[in-house]
Image (cartoon, rainbow, N blue to C red; front, top):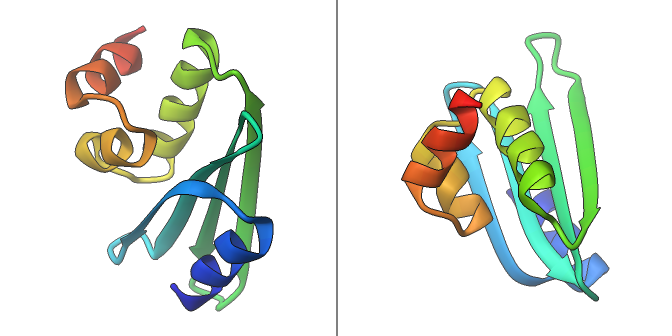
Length: 99
């Protein structure tokens, strides 16, 4: 978690939300800077290696939001966690996962 806090302060993100899923050993940070939404996910594998996945979306529209929701869900995040990270309702996450 310290690495994620450091990352957000170095980039200078606003409205930062961080989450950690101990079951999947995945941490993520979502924030905004200059109209761009940054999402970085770190996953610890059983070998001890850390995998980093970053997405940068400008003016995240409905299609971009659906893509991001599906990506986070495939990484093991629960609907409530995704909703909290992205600032949307849990029902929006549920509906977008059905599409």
